[in-house]
Image 1 (cartoon, one colour):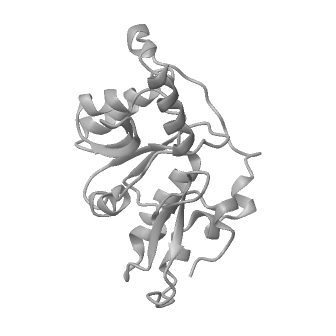
Image 2: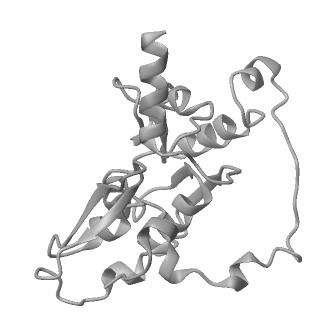
Amino acid sequence: MISFDFDKYCYGCKNCENICPKGAIKIIQNKEGFDLPQIDKNKCIECGLCEKVCPRCSFKKSDMNIEKKEWYSSYLNNVEERKKSTSGGIFPAIAKAILDEKGIICGCIWDENMKAIHIIGNNIEDISKMRKSKYVQSDLKNTVKILKEKVKKQKVLFVGTPCQIAAVKLFLDNNDNLYTCGLICEGVPSNRVWDKYVEYLQKK
């Protein structure tokens, strides 16, 4: 069973909830509005699956060693396309390449209630919705469970924050069909902060 200071260290990825075979883990919001697990110990069978897919439990300091990595900088030559993105146009270019190979894209969009959620898409329209930064913690919902089956048969591009990517790689066993596109992130505000901002704008 996962056991650490959830308020301090949990990423809110929902891997534990999605993998629990007994439904012993439910995601709730803490007082600050962050998604955290709540464990029903009466239902838990100590199978250890939640620990295996938890980014925090699997974290190793050696993962942070980037001294020997090579880094490259690039941007899309098409100026009009580049202006539509905050990634220099790199995300849509990679996404379109994946689509050309009959793959799928999993990225963040605003839903009809202005909530940041991850969806799975397979067309240009979906890619357009995934463009631009959201600056709030997105809800992965059950996308990882769907991707678990999809990635066995086709290429998958997942776009998200580094902690979300760590979670997806663990859940999908770092499958060779999985491609990831990470966002530079120093932490995200909770959805409650976003809700209050939207409420402020509406009143204004």
